[in-house]
Amino acid sequence: MPLILIDDHELLTSALASLLEGTGQFTIVTTSVTMPGPHDDTVTTAALWVVDLDVPGGGVEAIRELTQAGSRVVVLSAFATSTLTLELLAAGVRGVLSKSMPIDALAASLAAAWAGSCVIDPHIAPDLRRGHGPLSERELRVLRAASDGAPIGQVALRVHFAPGTTRNILSGIIHTLGVANRHEAVAVARERGWIE
Image 1 (tube, rainbow, N blue to C red):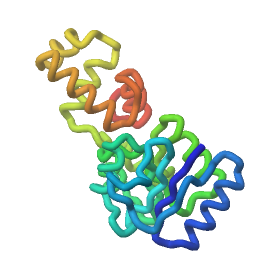
Image 2 (cartoon, one colour; image 1 turned 180 degrees about the vertical axis):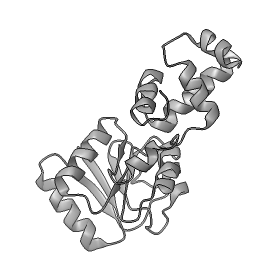
Image 3 (cartoon, rainbow, N blue to C red; image 1 turned 135 degrees about the horizontal axis):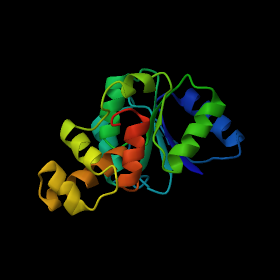
C-alpha cells in the first residue's frame, strides 16, 4: 500500500517511514516537511496521504484541497480534539489518528482507511458519538428518511424536498463521510449514534 508522509519533524517522519515499511504492508512513495499545493507534481490520488495538520502550508483548507482533488488523506496529530476531528471529517479526510498510537494499531487504521473506512482515534470517538458528527440536522433528517432504502422520490416526499434537492443532500452526505453510497452512510451514522 503506497503512503505519502507529510510532517515537519524529519526525525519522526524517518522513524515512522521505517516502522511502517517494516510491517510489510506499506511502501513510502515520498516524504515532505511541507504541504504541497494542489497542483504540485507530487500530488497523487494513487497513495494514502498521512499528514500532520501543523506542517508549513498545511491546515484544514489545504487538506480540503487535497481531498477535493481526489486524494485519500488521514491526519496524524498529537493534538486532535473532537471539534477539530469534526472539521477535518467535513473537509473529507478518511480519518484522524493520534501520534501516540502503537505502530500496530496505526498500521491497521491506515490499512482500513486505504480500504475505504473512516478511522478515528479511539480517545476521540466517544466524544463524536455524543453529537451528530459532521452532518447538519437537515442532512440527518434526509439520512433518517432514506435509512430503509426507499427510492429518492419517496424520501423526498418524507422530508418535503424536491427529488433533486434530496439527491444532492444525499450525495453531500456520502462525500462528507467518505463512503460509497447512502446505505454505507446510514451504517456509519448508526454505528456512531448519529441516527437510530
